[in-house]
Length: 220
Image (cartoon, rainbow, N blue to C red; front, side):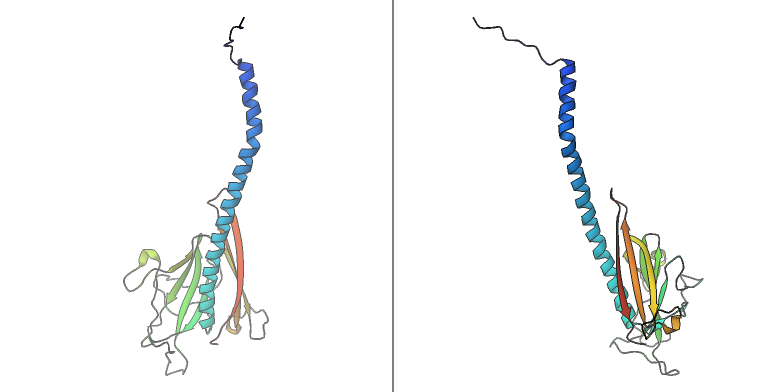
């Protein structure tokens, strides 16, 4: 004789125990997957930040190599910054004096001094942004550099400052004279070490990277 089929299901206690055991078994897998995702995301952001910082340092390098010196304050009037610029300070300002050039790439010489006219390039920060502003010496005939302005004050003749990054954290400048000795005298600076730090707080695990470079001026 065939025994009757039992339709008895799980009791509530058995279901709770089963679900608990499944949770215990699955939890490590979920945790490991989440940790793997966070690590991969962090590494991707770190790679992006590294490329970002290298691009910014490349622009620094290009300008410093062209520079004839540093200025403690801007010598060319900047209508967008009536109070003027001062090297250092909370805005991480670096003021580079750059020989003015014509469309052929030749230096434009001031007949009164026998030296090239000078433009200025201002590196500065604002929050998590790092910018590059150019100040044009209007006394130099044929000067091809273009004056730049903050984004809120741009005109057809004054395009926006170049934004180097949206992930700026900090920057430090160390100055050296022609003997390679560290100096605080702006007039004696012949090379600059830049330590640039960037951070990305948009991810679960905030990412911070730092890169540095030391660059010598070629037109001093």
